[in-house]
Image 1: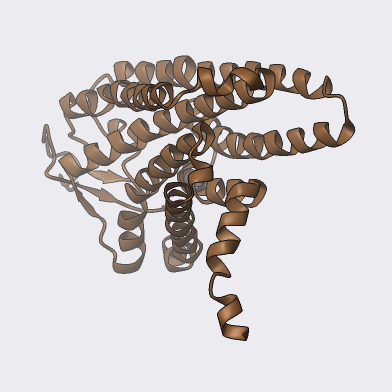
Image 2: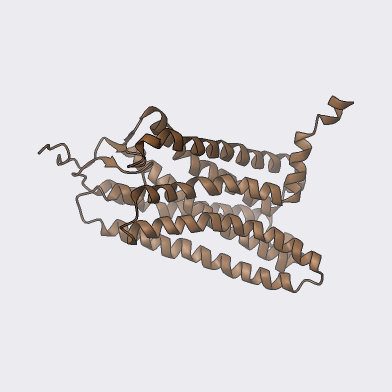
Length: 319
């Protein structure tokens, strides 16, 4: 028997990312929609940030939170997609051990940060709809800044034990990761040690962090819906509900694949690996792509500003 998979090494110099095992021949074709989505992520989120920065009418808490979300989405997708595409296109599968842990940290840090920003945006919608006269006094620029920093710090602290624990395990089986990126459970599962601490901590973050965020968002939107149904006119109810429905679409697009991927990887062992990997990539790509599209299309101020930028030279061309 070859001893290539039994050589003991406490910290391998590199890991090998296998991509999507079982679909190796389709890697190039799979990379095409991933690449298109990544381009949309870059264009959409940079456009949102540019418009909020240059348009004074968008200097409000909702759009500040949207800018924070755009930065988070850019970091979250950029931490995984370039390496994934280089794997699919150029077979560049090696990743340094420390770089793998950094990638792992960024994914979990900014996933938690994004979840926290959805809570902040739900709070903003709650104050704007349920306490409109006090909105500007409650959510001042100073308060918005502190909330944003708190969400980033929370994500940074919650994600810190992931790479610390992963670094301390001895790896003696193989350095091949059957994933497109350094996903936490995929990495620590290679350790030849009792990794229950890593498993339990990941479950703790999932239940205490994301579940609390989902509960707070649900509570906020319950109060918002109650306020909507008390509005005097049907047009006002439809307009307000339309604004909130776009937020709910973004939130669902983030939490459903995130929770599904995390829970299925831990408790359902008979699902095809390529299916779990695909779902794991969905929550890294789809929400960052959808956020600027949904907010840009459904938000009148952003839509108007974008049309002004696109049609700025129109009258001169046809005059």
